Image (cartoon, rainbow, N blue to C red; front, side, top):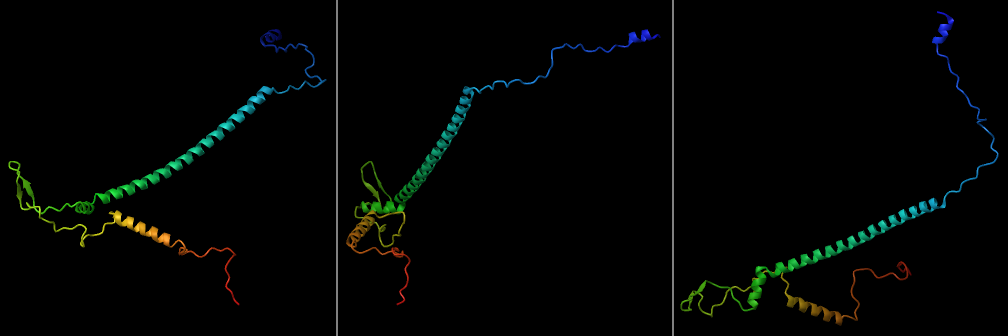
Length: 194
C-alpha cells in the first residue's frame, strides 16, 4: 500500500472553525446599575409574616381560653356531683324503713298484728285484729330505737340552730375563743427580763 492510499483511509482530524467574534474578556468600564428590589415582594413577605404571627397568637389565646372554660366546667361538674351525692344520701335516709316507720307513727298509723280481711258480700271484717281498740306494741320512736345518721330530725336541727343563734346574739360582746395565737402587730414577742 502506498502512502497515498493509507492517507485516504485514515481520518483527518478536522480543526474547528473559529469565528472571530472579538475578545471574550473585556475590562469593565462602568458598573451596571443596581436593580432595586421590588417593594411589592417585600410588602407581601412582611404581610405574610405578620399574618402567621397573628394566627399563632389567636390560636394560643383560643386554646388558653378553652382551657379556662374547661377548668370552670370541671369545677362545676365536681360541685354538681357532690350535690347529687348529698341528695342521694338524703333520699336513702328518707326511704329507710326506720324513717318510714317513724313518719307513720307520727301520722297515727300502727303496725298491723295479724291479717284482717274485708268480706265484700256483706262488708264485715274477718280476722284477729277486728277491733279499732287494737294498739301496736312496736314504737319506732321509743327507747329501743336505734339512731340513724341518715335520718335528720328537722325539728331538733331547727331548735339547735335557733339556740345557736340566740347564744351568738347573747355572746356578741364577748370575743370568740380561738386556738390560734394572737396576731403579731409590733414584731416578734420577746419575754420581759426585768
